[in-house]
Amino acid sequence: MCIDDAIAFVGGIDLTVDRWDTQDHKPDDERRICADGSIYGAVHDIQMAVDGEAATCVVAVAYDRWRVATGEFLVGVHASQRIWPEDLEPDFTNVAVGVARTGLHRRLRRGIREIERLNMDALRAARRSIYIEAQYFADARVVDVLAAGLVKPDGPEIVILVPLKGHGFIERWVMDGNRDRVVRKLRRADKFGRLRTVYPVVASPDGDCDIFIHAKVLIVDDKFLRVGSSNFNRRSTGLDTECDLAIEAQDRAAEEGIAAIRARLLAEHLGAKPEAVAARIGEGGIGLPKVIDEMNSKERRLRPYTHIAHRGPTHYVFGTRFIDPRGPLRLASLFAPRRRRSNVMPPFRVAGAEAPS
Image 1 (cartoon, rainbow, N blue to C red):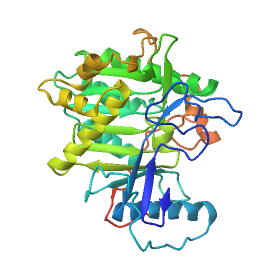
Image 2 (cartoon, helix red, strand yellow):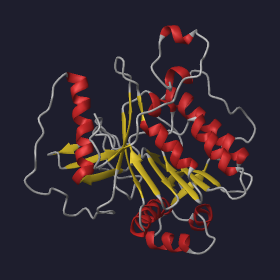
Image 3 (cartoon, rainbow, N blue to C red):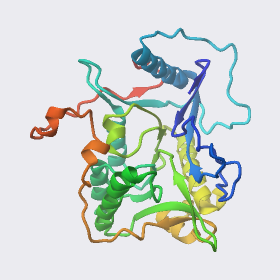
């Protein structure tokens, strides 16, 4: 969402029904009302707001997508004053913001897979920790990179938050099924106990209230933060139209900002104070998995995926190629032998550089 070409919001939050919630995620919050009057479940989501040159780049993406969809060329506007919300405290100021996209092939143009390249580069660069929040987690390429790090004695710690279950039969069959299989693969690779795959709940004597994760976040060490619309699944990196924003820390202040965001997220899921989580992480030798284990005792907590057996398949479930394709499906390709394809992608765009088109 872009306003007056001066501020842009990018993330997982959909401007539609059954998405509103607060950070309390109260199980019986009567303000979460469906069209039929019933109460929908708790939803956790994240957006990043940017202004300045970063907003200009996002606006260029939006204008280009409107042109492709409608054939119309929008005329830019210029806000006469800064319109940043007064009650929104910035986490970063004067930092470079990367804009990464996924986009379909357009006639003779190569498809845009900047997000896939960015994800893989960031995950391979991890040294200490990887923190992921995702609605879908079902991409074997990503899992292979994570598994390679888990088998190393000095590899990074990995914390993955995904919802307990998706919406609808097809989504649960394919997306949840593939999530369970890739989690199984990661657990087999976790030789040193550095992996936590969990889902958030509000616990009560009457049973858990599951909190649906719709956020799409990746934090690597204290160096890299990505927030956007893309998930860790095949469609998001090859077929859907996606946009993510990323910050790579260039100084100590940016590193502290990224670490503070990770502490805030964990604190929300653990029902704790961000300062307490940050202080515990800051103690020598205390990593993210141990912090979760120690502070995971309140109503707000993170549950492990105990239903996933250690033994079982790790390959994609039947139907993945149709429900979660990595690119456009063509009838002839369904019956043709697979060939190795080039993964060459356009360069990653950075705010302040030439606006993407």
